[in-house]
Image (cartoon, rainbow, N blue to C red; front, top):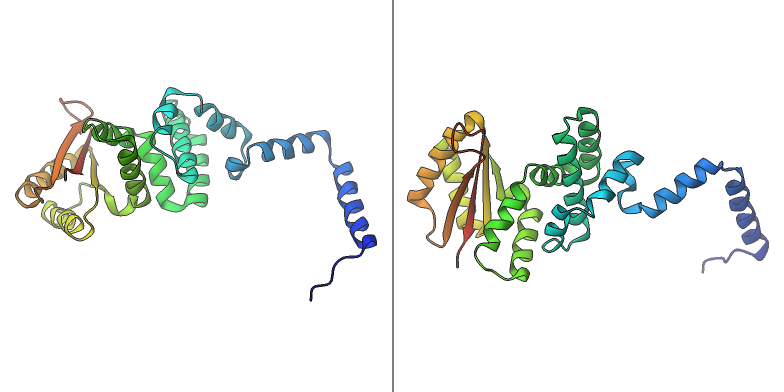
Length: 233
């Protein structure tokens, strides 16, 4: 049976806590309060970045995502991605690397990839393809959560070193084995040609229950290509 602390022992602990608080400076107390008020992102540690993350919660971009993202951890990762986008637009390399490092330490590579796909608008474009099907908010929420929870499996980034036939076979196998609601293929610059070859090969093999939809950042001399493979039935 566990021993209960005596009244005198409890008093000593309380006295020690009080003494410790008295010794804190006003600035340290303010810092503790700030951390408590922002405990969901306190792991970031940098006050300036934390304030930028909080500011995202009032933006139209977050209001869009808020409708379809219900998981608390995923919500934080989306907000981190929006913050990363802001730093990227400003070419703020110091805060980009600082934020990426914090995200990786907290959420590992999966969380970093989620933030990156938010930053590059891949996720918002994916959600729009689902909205265009007139699916319910509940079903869209389910599909978005599924792909974010399986981002390493269901989002494929092609490089100019990849073999188109090999990648097409891998994607086909993932569809046949996992039967996901969606797969996303992304590429940039020199890999776009391989991306297009993969789609040509998939067109001959892909399950008829899936529909492929591709977008380019620009039609002339594109530097980014995204393909959404969504289940239709």
